[in-house]
Length: 58
Ligand SMILES: [Zn+2]
Image 1 (tube, rainbow, N blue to C red):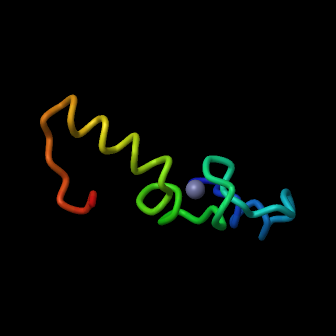
Image 2 (image 1 turned 180 degrees about the horizontal axis):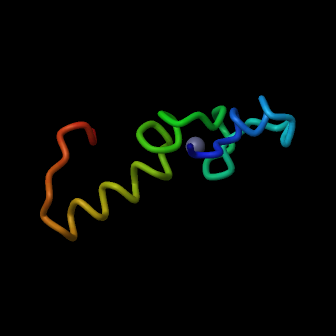
């Protein structure tokens, strides 16, 4: 299981749930992998370099 900030908050390890990549949203699984603008820029770069098209990347 991925220890995102929301999960670390639940188990008591972190009080701040903000995404460390964009500092604008809570870091939950969906945000970290699909919604974060920083992560999306990385997915888009990988897509362009590899020529692999992922339809969920807008
Ligand atoms: Zn983010």
